[in-house]
Length: 347
Image: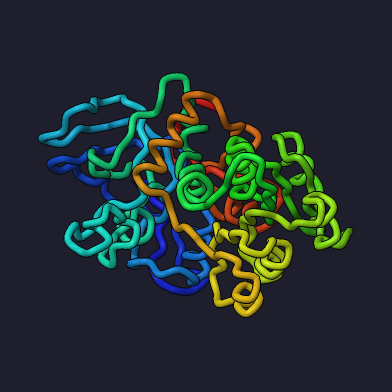
């Protein structure tokens, strides 16, 4: 089968390889991958900015159909449309695991970085970490479940957002758009900020329900924040751009004793005004990846059609064209770019 793998560090380390179809073991499912999304984490792995157990097949955002059911598995059958958790295994005995937080297990292994992932024609996952895609939800839309789940964890499960809050989302890319939608569903007044060249993205945020948008290259963000919040400052800010100037701006427009939520990876060490946060008693929290509960909430939202996701899928590339797909991500002229490992009739 074809698989997109990171074989070794360096710019030549990513290759499309032919490898054997993986066998399915006890308690496992083999899934024929329909779509695999290119995530910021994948880009960091490509750029040697994120630890991965090389060589490894990349990709942790995906949807597909069950191809084979291993011994001992119940509740799934061949042909079922499914997604799965990113965390593939954890020790089960450390403090984090005992408290039900496998995402922080030091022995955690995730598909696409610690174990072979979904940028391949087939992936094998544990059945107890798989989920049925709700009826009526397309495979293409379901491929966004993992990034939605990450934002669900940030907005719904980690942050202190309340109905009526003034919320600022910095970065109108895929994660910012999802975060803004979830914040609006939570009852907040949402402002989305972007930089030069983000005009179309900010316009989409407005169409998807943002109460206001700000191009920080065209106006004074602090002044605009005072206008929107009647001088109070934002109650909650979500940093979704993963760049240092965005983090700095978020902290400055956050009210005293408000909450700063880091959503996206920076991929490097960045300066941060910790004294400013301390003096204003600004609470800093973050979240990384999606937990089981995050996926469960996500699937309920998808089933209820509470999120507008179709506009966030920019292009689908055959896996053979992965280099063009990666270049498309780097251009930042869209949102989610999907790879199609096989030949699928669905659009």
